[in-house]
Image (cartoon, rainbow, N blue to C red):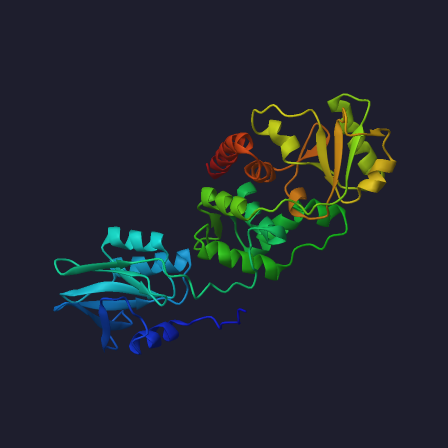
Length: 364
């Protein structure tokens, strides 16, 4: 049974180092100075009669930003002759250790992982210990469910001047909060999500708020994506061609004040080339009411319309209106394809290219 762990501070990390609780066998690490201009401490690492002195840069958060900032300081902060830089963090994953080794910087964590490089004397590399200090976040995963809309909005508009502007853009793009019963996203949720995006080096906040790693953002969204909760589905045969079916559905939805949007899989042709079954699947928060307004026969054979009930907000976010109908955003389409089979995932690469081109045009 897990228990709540108070987030570490940099003082906590340094205190563990002083107490000898930071270990990387066969090395022996010992604090010899508590102060050095610009550094948190000085340690001596010794092994088999060889020694090396290191200036310590402590970080309390094992986030991409925390790691990047620590590495930058180790590369730029001045050091006395014969002293090497070393960073100490709660956790260093193997990719971090490999990056440090390439840069010639040492690093150890509180979990037993590390790389310590003293040229001409020794190199120790140890990885595989599990993270005992997961980064605290008030939102469990900002890349799924409603908070994902904060991340998604940057793939529609890559820069904003303020947190309030981000919130407004999210709520304008959220079809269910603007035309249904859902509560608009709050400023607090937006602020918390933006903090994680900054820590993950996806959004830069040095000049406003700017998307700096769109591909990393897409990967994070895809890795956390969950299909809408399985709700009721109704499959119909409607006696119309595809164009008139969308017109009919839009007219009936407007008449009953219901938001409707095509699923990502039914919106693929707007962003990529792919042959799919000629069935229009749509999301709607109340499919029974919509069904009652439609002339059509329920059937699993020769169906051309599928009504999927969900009132989750992300599938309705940033919908694209064209030809009199609402289509899923390119992001929603990409995520649904990435959750599919190999053929779907190959098509997702086309949608990804579409998204990246669109962002590049906006940045010009």
